[in-house]
Length: 549
Ligand code: ASP
Image 1 (cartoon, protein in one colour):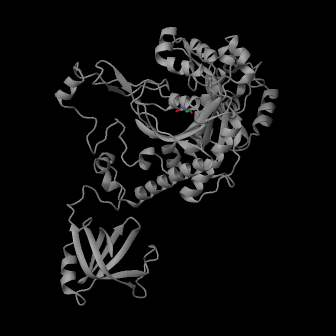
Image 2 (cartoon, helix red, strand yellow):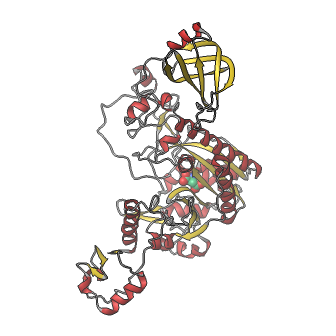
Image 3 (cartoon, helix red, strand yellow):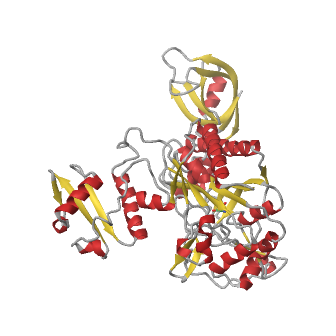
């Protein structure tokens, strides 16, 4: 017996071929009037996406009519019974072509999910999540759920708030991450925690951001960064193996944040192509060309017919040219870009240019260099602990305020040389995408308090926002650290998709709307009254603050 959807019907002079689709794929059913006139007549009425059930016998297809493109292409079903379980209206969009109108697809997402590509993605996601659970379970980790109705955590984005009916005027916040809860679980003695956790961040959306997303969240006590690295590498190997039978190379390379910026202009470098940046500060220290002595700018040299073509080349002396030639190994056909600015800005500008050029030249596709890895994993370590916010005129935590300064930099921290302090923090990068990040945490109440002070969090706010954490740290807190991975991004990469929406069953669109259920939506005034909320009129279009770290 076969049950499924009518994928397509073909009438070959009275003989009707129906492709029935179930979650495994397609099977051909043949209705021949000479074998069963009644059934063939019924089959004539079938339309795409009707739901049917067929009983019959499996027969080999006639020689020459096999379909090598289908796993079931050698056989067909000769039915003796057809039950039409449900009829489908004409579809809002065809399922066998790539529809352009994303809104239409999202409005009928259940139809979209009938397509092979998305059905496959859901399977891959399931296998990735299962491998995560199985692997972490095998290592003694316990999955603990933490509250969705929780309190605002400073992860860097805007919170989603939920008004309390029982305590009017008070609000829960949906968790941006279970960060504080998982640390409190360490204080509770859980020692090895994980959770496949829903997280919520109210920010402007891009292809790889959604207001709600899923993290593989991990925390462990009495561990070193090396323990977290080894655990992560083995877990990712298990995930890739289970999800798509891909073997990944471990251990991953490690690059410091400084090195990543210096060589690739990014803290999530894509190393599947080279084009490394080169610091020419020394070469041009004495240059007569003023761009290189302080002023900003982007310049280029094009090498054509052994000639350096550039508006700036006339400013170089021979020694500078020779050094340039050898440092950059300049060759015919090359184009060299320069920028002169503060270290961070110069790195960032050239880093972006590097990615843009790779895109234009299709360095991940047709122009891939032989031997380039399919899956380039690496650790970026030694992030700065702080970053300066010119807008707020204060230091912010680059990761989050619970991240430990590196032991070697503790003195710098004490001396308040905040720009120089490195964090015991790490990110995992895959093919130029940050797929996870974490840190060793502060577990001493005094150090945590100093950290809040460095971040200009006032004592009153410290108590109201983090009093529970500081108290817990005074009652026997073990050293601990952890990491969290964006499951959606990870699965997106494994599936070869460009957007995390394509690996989520019911994503929101770029205005954070679920078009299928029309959410967010207005609510009954009675509900608002119960919450003691009065609407102040339509809010002006607002912009979310900058994204989380
Ligand atoms: N909670 C952090 C985040 O969501 C990850 C971590 O530090 O474990 O980025």
